[in-house]
Image 1 (cartoon, one colour):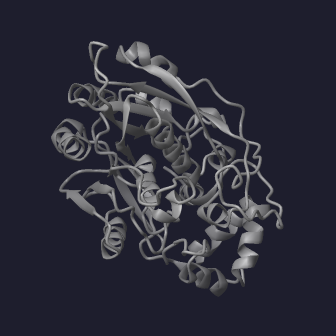
Image 2: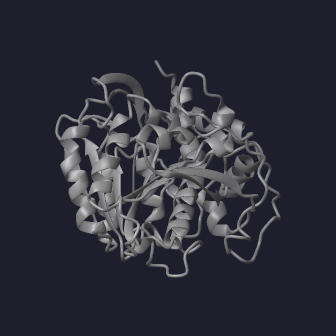
Length: 398
């Protein structure tokens, strides 16, 4: 059974954890170009990527590496006040088979892993994500699996033997940067149709599309603020959309189409609420709630229950347009005398992150807004989901 503290740490670290770092208070840069928004982080020693085995396992594709960067949260990205040395990201890229004479460019789908890490893609549990490559390739869509953990020295961020340091090394925003850097890598590839690049993932990987489809994020990486992924499919997005540190005022890129698919027995109300916020701002997004399905519904195993916590009674944790946390969560911090001002909060967050998390845990406990619930995982719905998955990407990438 997962403790309250461990669960909340995982959720909080999805928002803004990164490797051990100390941000200088006055380290602010005027230019928000990619080369300038990152400062050196001491992330973990790189591990050998499990994806190195994929060419043999899948019988196709090649290993590709590209540079990405580390940031701790959206605030630091928007304020342009951190720099980082590049981190090498490993990916496995496969194109549809041809006779070698075709010069036609093809669409590509980027696939993200979840908190279980890239190694799960080789396990029976995530077998569906390997199997889906074949119908994609057969229908003329390339596939690019990317590993966000190994280059940062992390194996996974949720299992029993993880350390808190592992959580700090890979923030949700860092993984989002990996995704957008994969996009920029692919759009310049001679075989790729730059206007037909899609992305998908489940759980943690299913939350990333909410970040990378927002103009406030893409403007730091792309010249055309409305360009980006043509099709985004979010499966079982986690943590709950209310506390994942997403933008309070989402502005989806105009040329993107997004579909969110969740199991009814997963926590769904917060993401439905967030989808409506995106729609209200003109975003092309839909959500499909599957009756009787679970979290990570494509998991290749019978459904099981793990004890998690529901934060729907808590104030939402959003990032405002100026990069600051929303007033509701700050009011909660002030009510329980954790921090009087946002400046106090961020000063602690960037200099004493672990103590800051402990304070936040105490605030949530005192507020009585957290409800303990049993969350269902798995259920072997991958095969049942495949036609909808394929239909979405065939319509939007071909």
